[in-house]
Amino acid sequence: MSYLTTSRCRLFYLDTAEDNPSQKEKPTIIFVNGWAISSRYWKPAIDLLKSDFRCISYDQSGTGRTSIEGFVPNFTIEGFANEAGELIEHLGLDRSRNLHIVGHSMGGMVATELSLRYRDALLSSTILACGIFEETAFTSLGLMFLGGLIDVSMNFRNIFLVEPLRSLFIKRAATVEISKEYSDIIIEDFTTSDKAATNAVGKFSIDPESLRTYTRSVLAIESPVLCCVGMADHTIPPEGTVTLFERRKTSTSSPTRLVQFMSLGHLPMLENTARFAAELRNHFDFAEHFYKKTLPSTPLSDRVQIP
Image (cartoon, rainbow, N blue to C red; front, side, top):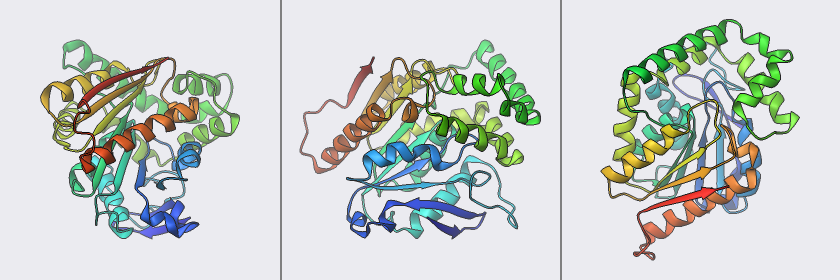
């Protein structure tokens, strides 16, 4: 484990190459977290991937072991991308095309921004449970209601430390039961994250203009993109990720795939780690072959459903 002092925080990160320097020669995955959660929830997937990939995870400012004391960070997509970008450059991951970026939930928006900034280093992007929606009066009302729920959640979030609200919080995030270790991590991260950061992230994640920018940015990624979603997600409607895939499929010739975990929720990396890691491997393998041009006949768009 290490710390990097950036322009906005003292950033905590984990790099599997620290224990195994030979990994610096392998393709690298950087994992970008979702709302109000530290990097700890990536560990089960990293354990399955680190034999073949250098894995980087980090706590965004306002979460986990990253400290913002003495800093005044702006909690925006650009700001979160800036701190991740400083980490990417510090580790030299911008110097060759060897980088896979995986973003979950709100982290999908940050991952998309990073994918455009480091397009020359990028092998692939994975966007997990971070979709878009057609703008209608109904969806606008729904987003306004969700914004109100964020305010309420942040003002009374300690109630989720006790039953039965604790269990209800976890069941909303994970349709399939996850271990107590990671249930405890999710609750701890949510209730101890910086309130200003968590509130700001929740708001910009549903801001219509931010979502329009996000859509344009996803369409501009030239590297292979995997849209991945648990179709039993009760946190973010999974149809939004399907819509994002379809929009990219019809608007760009760049490689795009959709993986639907039909019975999983918002945390497939914990609900079925083996399947999640296997789908990432498939995507990464495709991206490497895409750039080597050894699979010229591979379809540029593919739909996979996992029961």
